Image (cartoon, one colour):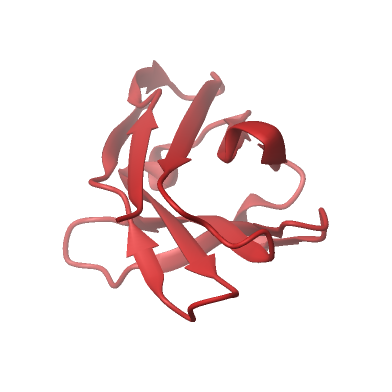
Length: 117
């Protein structure tokens, strides 16, 4: 059973920074993709950034240049460094893991990020 535990959300003023962490536990195939999604009230869940186990990354246009995704494969942990935060970044942020061995997707419980103007 794979579990994802997120941490690092909170309230920050516009222009500030936050760092999210997501630790995965359980049996995970070495080839996998970890990523961050977000969902604002009344909006669909959208991809923020993802990173393959090899290190290749992908970002939503809205966060390019402001957010950085990274991972520690030894710890099965993914990070999202968020700088120059804007009120429109306010959302619940979810961690997701795609296991390349089983083809299963797993989600974390979500962490709230609120950016005040």
